[in-house]
Amino acid sequence: MNDQEIELTEHLAELRKRLIYVLGCFLGFLALSFLFVEQIYNYLVKDLEFKLALLGPGDVLWIYFKLSAVSSIAFTIPVAAFHIWRFVLPALKEHEKKATFVLIPALFFLFISGISFGYFFVFPTCLSFMQTLAGNEFQPFYTSEKYFSFMLNLTVPFGVLFELPVVILFLTSIGILNPNTLRKTRKISYFLIAVASVFLTPPDFISDILVLIPLIFLYEISISLSAFIYRKKLKKLELLDSNTSSEI
Image (cartoon, rainbow, N blue to C red; front, top):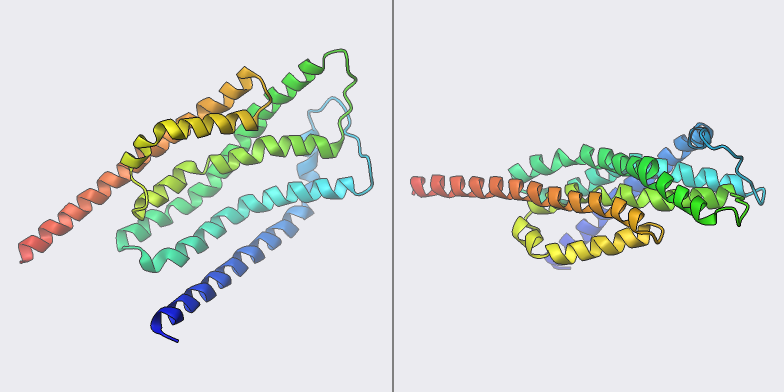
């Protein structure tokens, strides 16, 4: 076995170890979340004017599992980010190590912010639209499984999409992305964001706009943050080159 094969084997072993850590953390947080899932459920339904129905004895378990899983994902995200950071650490320069490490807590807070935006803003708007659309022609009958599936489908994607600034910052810090690339692909990105907003919301113009505007705003923030990091990297490289030239 040559050196390259040995190095690849070591990297794979390191990756497997970190994946096991992340999976173990997810399962631990899942078990902990399940202990408090009833309180989470009661908080989410406290403002409902009607009772949710169950069509089978297993529905409540499935609902509790979904709520626990989302809670577990939220707390596992910074742990997963830390292990990704540790995995790529040997390839990072000293200033890149510090710059990328401070992004880890931001992943958790942005995920929670995205979930909150979806729950407090998008979800009630879409639910109200659906109820208006039904009008007096239909008698609403919500099952817990359908209600929470609808809720999670409108909230969890925002938790993921709100991670965009941190992901772009990280990729800029390690040299994979730069603001010039982001600006050149702005039109394509806007198109993809528009498609995502259409798929995430009911088929009405108002809901699409409610989703489209914050996503475009996030993308523009990401470009600005990327430009800031990129300028700092260029200044450090120029300073390093000047120091090297003076030593010569």
